[in-house]
Image 1: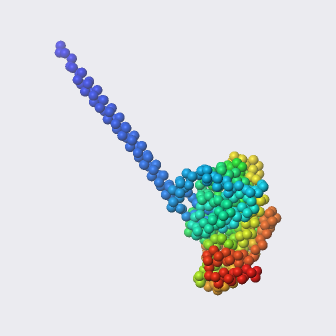
Image 2: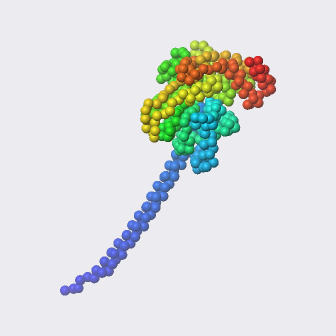
Image 3: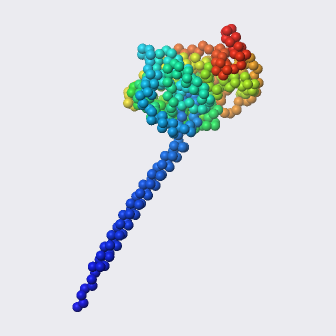
Length: 453
């Protein structure tokens, strides 16, 4: 019988091959893991870069402002956030916010670099309240005018934090540093006509920005009372005159009006669920020194002085367009009256403890003036004849006529406008020629008019 075959060499060879296969499998697995990690990391970096470029922090402001995306927004926000909470920064925030009168308010004013915001900030500070501003200084109109207002406020010890309403971390930090008693929310994307060019800016500021502010305010302890700027534009296609808070506001004629109406409904929601005390103010064509260059009285003045023609609108049935022009000092008195009569919010830790105040008021002048009359007043003040170009009003969201009934504001906080259009425009033009350094002849005419007033 032959001996059994020697299989030892075969077994050793199989073991060796198995060992080699295990080594290769391990190396392949390790290589695959490294590759998968690198691919995942690369995808994450690409996504971060994509969202940074396409979704920069949304702009606020603030008061009446347009929100172009800032090309430096990601970098500047990162750098700015790194300094949040620094001792020097917090000291400035607290100092500006601290009231100087007994039982004074500590007010966060959004849009403080804007027209109404800067005037209200100065009035609050003057009477001894603490004021902290928030503004993003966007370029809807010339930012240098906003910077000039900022310098004016700084002279009165009012600090404006440069930041964004949609920056929740920044808002949360401000409320952590300062227990604000009140918020005067004036930051917004303003202007009826611009909404046809850049609708998203209105949603970002007037809707998303307002919600962002309310989200932080609802969780603050204590919750602040909030007064905020709505607009007469919410009356839209309403034909009843004068406009009353009881009239319907569900027919907006522009996207701007729609976002302001949305704000009123959002205010109702946060009042109902979280106990935030909210007061909305419907402004009627506010004008005056340090005003907005995108408004008719302002660019009419510029164009008349430069000898350019101006477009004076009339309605489709050849009637004059008229506005309830309201002087800035009267609006400021209305804003402060609303703050003074605002009740405390009733929520705590984001939970409602009881019914809270919810109000809406018109702030107008109660005396509509045809735009043609506005031009005539400016001609007299500037000692220059305007080159009028009368055209039919385009369908761009503007309404032909506004007229405010302010009896509710008068009843609740004594609001009573006292400045007629001629007097208000005289003060505006005097500021305008001084600010822009206009020819001495015009300055002399204004000074002489002032002396005879």
